[in-house]
Length: 220
Image 1: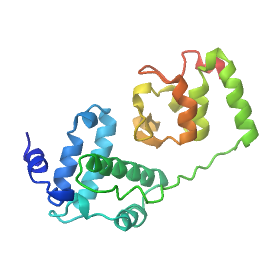
Image 2: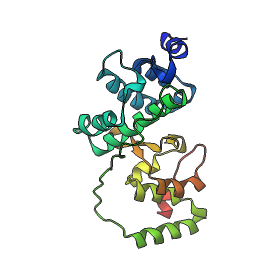
Image 3: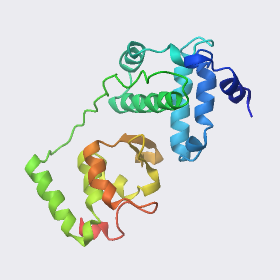
Image 4: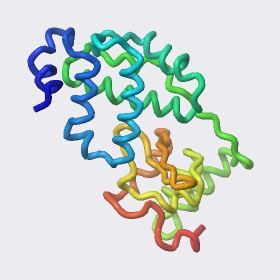
């Protein structure tokens, strides 16, 4: 056991008074559930949490943060980052404080009442609601609906077709609502999955393997 694990287990006090932010982060990033995530997911979350931890005094505790604090961090401190990075920061911190909540280190998640950042997308051509409904309806009828996840990710997450073809089912983190995409130049990024997209994809989701069928290019 690490010193942080011992500290969290034996000195948490009531309402997490004695759980340091550093100890909480180590507890989260070494938890069985976290270490089962993909390497990319772990690296990205650790990077964000390290940046968050570095911004505060070493004696700050996990229950020190209010909704106002988290709103200031996400919207003021993160004002220079992209919309996507801000959304990913929100997802990371929300997941971390959820972990703290389940451990009874805090009474409520301070991120929960912060407005979820919106990601603006610039699409050359936007389909109307009616066109989207028609496309998804037709997709369900072709090849037993194998292309439904492909179109859902393209429409609701603005993921490029070539990127979807490189995406596997184990790239999804359903609890945190993100999918890790293999983008241009071998760069990987996390993309938020809206609830509408999740509802379309879940009936076709598998444990592993590619998201798109082998004959996707022919069907597309």
